[in-house]
Length: 559
Ligand SMILES: Cc1ncc(C[n+]2csc(CCOP(=O)(O)OP(=O)(O)O)c2C)c(N)n1
Ligand SMILES: [Mg+2]
Image (cartoon, rainbow, N blue to C red; front, side, top):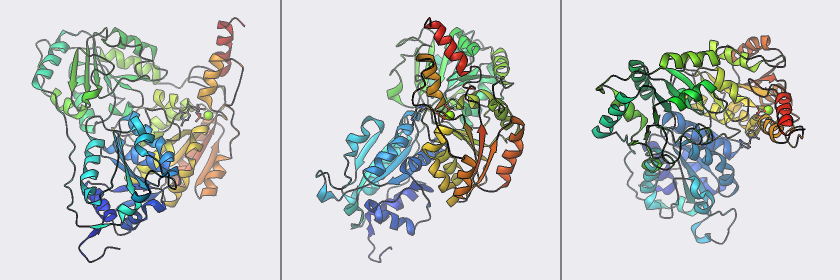
């Protein structure tokens, strides 16, 4: 409770700073290490979501950062709380998402004795964060929280971890609040844009690859207008399909896992590659095989908001230090000595051909047909959330994202993300249509957050693609060690009964044609829902069966 001495506890000052920096949502698992903050929440208008495991809380905050571009915030306790949460910290790192995590810490006079649950967070989080610090002087709460928001959100965004000793939090102080932090748009200079225009004028087959963070709907629209004007094909990179309207006539496809071979050929044949926002990491670069390192064989423009990322892997012919949003704005009105003209029409035709119809699959439920149904029936602003597993291949291939922020999924390939992300999206957009997609393995990594969905009355539908195995790893096993199944089989619970036990709605689908009615029933229930799809384990990718992969590797191994 706030006292009348005109002083505030450090915890109250901290919560006031969050409000000043525009925070609306906080995700947490409570701990006795930060009771004073929990008490300050009591008097605040922050929307608090109490979670069942810190990884879920941290992923929820990361998802908020991903779609808003402003740091998501979570609070966890020391030791086991912080180590659980590290899963979400790693996602924020690899996905370049702004995140600020507060960790309750042992009292200052016990530091370095390995007191109860004490961890050295600087050492533990190491290179995963942009900054890890501890507030030992309560008077510095406004300064350090302000720096945390600037650091997490600007340049290449990422996670910041702040440990808050419990005795520091209860000290009463006369602190001056910080002003709200600013998002800093780094804009390209006129010389950069002139060089860019000259390179584009000289190109016959330019291509754009979009990725990373610091995007907005305005940026996506700006790139779309520019691409259309000059007929430039645009691809998105792994898990960034929502950066461009995939129904747009310039959309060329997804450069990720299992890409369209024609698209890869097109990227390789391009005479100007324009990478905007992304790092072109291992997955989109097809295992660093698309472009030579350090100097790409093709004229290469790299636009990135983090100065330290330019030249880190690729020594671009034109590195541009700019946010995608500022770069897209600078494209407006750009003039050329010779108007560029790309091959967008052919590229989009290849994309449509590759994704239009579901492939034939063994088993009575064709997940491709389910994705096509969702594509045809969900509104453009529906948000799809998922984690990692082979099932995601069907999402990337058959769904068509149209709006910025409509796909919330980890580029870091982390399992267990879909349910927490869907909880966060439904908290952020109570009227929004949110669909979570999960593998059977994937779902149970953070399936406990289904209870959070029930607790906060968050009606979203989770589609569980149940093939009774850690399918991705089984696929790799069949390729490398054919026929030798090891530690990849799963015996699953009755998922619809799981949903009902938590207070949600559950249904199982055994045939493709039953999916629409089941999905509609889940939506009509008004509850968090699970639609479980019975998938034939043989249907391991949209084009391969396990038997085919095994036979191929046995043949290659001469057995
Ligand atoms: C947190 C985490 N642990 C382990 C992995 C390694 N991994 C990648 S995919 C996968 C299996 C996914 O299984 P499931 O969710 O059932 O999807 P499926 O591949 O069967 O479609 C595993 C274990 C990972 N990516 N993330
Ligand atoms: Mg599975």
